[in-house]
Length: 217
Image 1 (tube, one colour):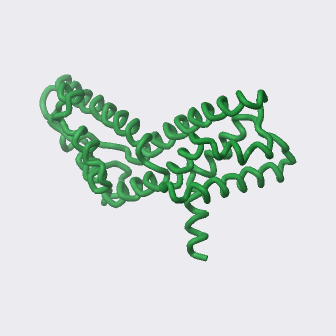
Image 2 (cartoon, helix red, strand yellow):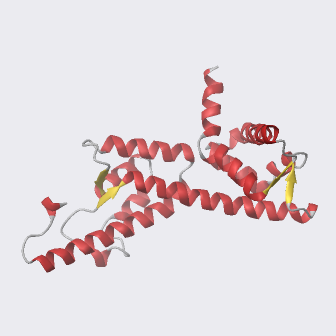
Image 3 (spheres, one colour):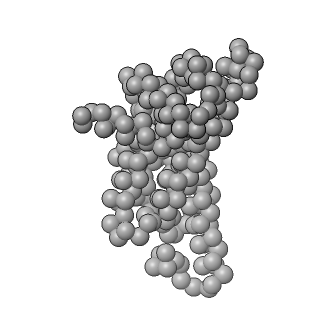
């Protein structure tokens, strides 16, 4: 950062660096929001892997140009192009130096955003499902029916990164939830319990890890 900082009066140097930091914040916010809706859990792990490969110095940071290269390699060219200084919402914040991205923090930010979006989707499905049953919880007997709701199936498809794996994903999620209920002697689940379990299975990589293990067998 110091190597590319402008020389001269301290105040002008500070203001230029401040613009650089602000532009970096805009980039991280924009990319984080977009990737949260586009990347499956498997793709997010691949994204972080490619970021680490790009960071040859293992510093935990790389430039916005490096970020564009990673996104282009993952075929997200449109997102990459919007990071450039020609993008409308960044044009006013040009500066003479590079923006440096904490890519681990960016990946963590995407994960948090995905968890929020996932919980919101589960909540909508949960509310719609409960209209028919007039209860605040889901019993184990109702669980299979809930997991086959269209919006829930879409979430499973997103998490497993393939519409072909939806039946296996639903079955695996059901087994995962039932195992928890067996261990805790629970006959029904409240929303936050169910959402946390589904998120742990589908969004934290458990589903894809289970699929990989099954494939090796």
